[in-house]
Length: 510
Image (cartoon, rainbow, N blue to C red; front, side, top):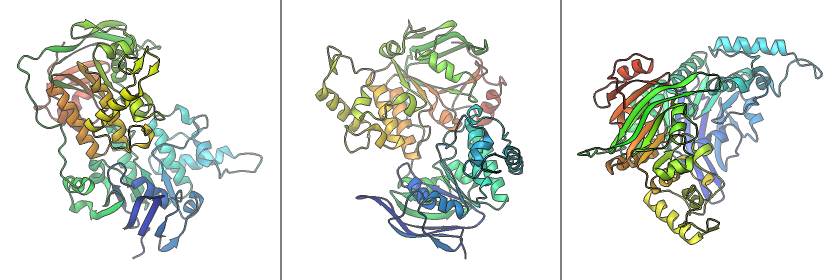
């Protein structure tokens, strides 16, 4: 049988490190083939070899029955391969059409034929249901629409084999559903799709076959219809995984720790993004906030942790107001903050692990003499202790944070938040972009803090995460809490209705 892609003992070494070790599997023409594995398993390295960005150390790569040796992405594009990277390669100031035709412009050398290009792109967009205006500037598009531009770019170059690297990492649940529909439509049009993912619900929903790699080696290839998420998890991690954080301990007399009292905020356009919102989080509980992205979650988080001033209302931590206080003061008062974007807001990637774990406390007497001279010994000892406690896998605490996997980077953020001894933890998308093994660890860490009497406010766009971790769930819609329900008695359907604004749960005011 002639395969669209066939790998024969493909190996890639970086000095003494073997990223891919004799990888062999086949992708049939016209199928959706998933490549699953934990972060650091070697998935992206493998995709980069297929796309010509890396040259294999040894082994063979066959495309449509022909052995190939790519030296650049130009070679793979010429063979009908297109790749949509996790981090988009677009120029925000250019239009959709200008981004798509870059490098293969239509018209004469002196004059670009924009009308023809835009017409062709509009036809492609309609054909695949992508709904993209070729004349709009990319910088004005949402993340979802930018991803569709990347898809259009490879289709415009007549790619028959499409590679997607963690395509849903930056999408909301609703956007993920739309993306899966697009992939299925591409398959119907005869395209062959190879996509990297560690989200097993997506893998089970749309793939025909799954190849699992672990520590750079193929564990096996299975038909999706003949496997289960549990089996795939065992293949990925090498053991059974239990999400949800484990056993819960009940507080006899739970004390109110975090009180959000009729808080409101209007943006620069005078639109009320948070509207009289009230919540209460007690010691020893995880209160999850569920909602469609853009319903006031970002503004609420920023008001709690001191990044944005509220217009009305108050927020009290253990009885003391933290309203409109600076971020550093809010954290010193007892808010542990796990931000949504660990790269943008959680870490300084060029700093070492040791430097990152003490950020925010680097001028405290424990770590600095007179607030200026860093105490390297104390910093190193603290970092080493946290590395062991939180299982941060690295070559040493002097390693740059940028050298770690996403899961280990997130462990630094969580270690720092917990080390400060918070009364309440504000966890925003704490497992975003992580593999199942890292998710299990983060869930256990949050439940452990809950069991120690901390109040945990969890914001996540993953409904499964909200349901498995929370004791109670508050649903936010248009800046208001439309209802609060018992996490163990509600359903996805009830939460879905509430997320659309239907008041079906019990309404409460803190």
